[in-house]
Length: 306
Image (cartoon, rainbow, N blue to C red; front, side):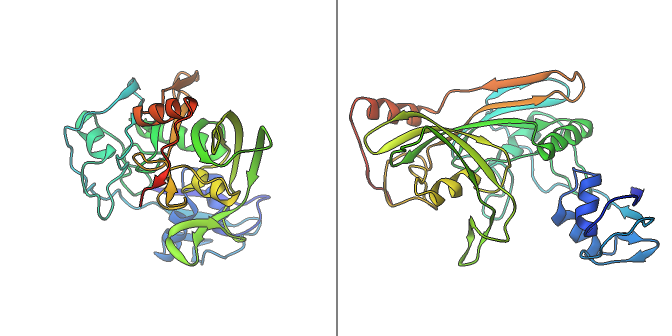
């Protein structure tokens, strides 16, 4: 499949211009296609840093989807909503979303493939997954069942029109009742397994609101304006309020649980075919609920958990 468009008033690097024209393409994906010679300008191959000019004719050749290596598995799923276009799943804490090195099976995708057919798109079979949450983060995910739905949901994420609200139990107390963290995120130059606030990182914005204060912890609501890897976890650590139980960005002396106390509690999006706004909410997992009950009762089980 090929896509062709002509530059009129657009300016800047070709990889940025292509993703602006087609929000479902990521910059890393477009850069890969440029490296593989799948993008031409006026019938010439160009590099990712090529600056487009008025009148340029850009042709993008999208490769055929590669076979999916994940296999269907009869894994129980907590399906909150489903129709012929979308599925909304309440992902359990401890479940990996997509197969990856070290996690080839037992993932949400493996369970979804057993449950239903999922689409591939843009030359890579990404079975319905338009956004992810970390393994030890629980809560709501929207999944596309058709290519049309995948395009629509991806575009909504790109346009920042989806509703994504998280509950987080974090270390420390806040003087303020609400705030915004606007700090770019990228790979930590000292540890490639971590993300960090870096000057040349990708734009990332998290809004937070205090919901409940305890002696040494605070329950907050976080609203994502962008959706970067580990965004809430890194942003909260950046302002010295790391998420309780976070094994990567938090202190060793923390609340015991099943990883970070972070839960995707509310999700909203416009349905790809009906145009109606759908919103969903789910309660926190039992370990999160029990920990909040303990803190309200003045019981603090903080200890060295690593």
